[in-house]
Image (cartoon, rainbow, N blue to C red; front, top):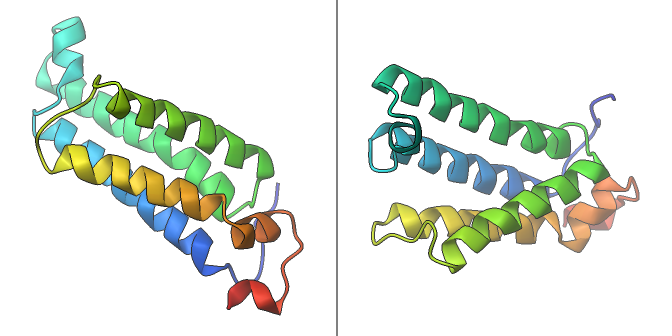
Amino acid sequence: MTAKKGKRPWTIHLFALAFLLAGLVRLANGLSGAQNWINLLYGAGSDAAIIAHFTEFTIALFPLVWVYWLASGGARYVVLAFGLVRLAGFVFGIELGTSLVSIIEPLCILVGLAAMLSERSSLWIEGQESLETFR
């Protein structure tokens, strides 16, 4: 796999920014102790929780890199699947909260998915971009 050269449409930039922001919000929320699932599940200490949250953040960045730098069409569907699973957690109340974080993360995921699935992004990923793509 080689990096896609050239200009990217604004929708790809929006997708990357939205997913990066969602990941950072989740990381900050996890490190603040508000959502310390590692301690709840395993009774692990704070070091293990920090490592687990940064690992989760790093894993979330892999598909972002695949779509943004490599223009991988397959990664687009992986991102879509995992984004919908994350949104289902919010919709069905599994991760529902009253904090601002519980509103920002799903909103970022929705914006990112919409930007990634837009026509401009699809044309760019498929290699059919033209001058009209970037307007």
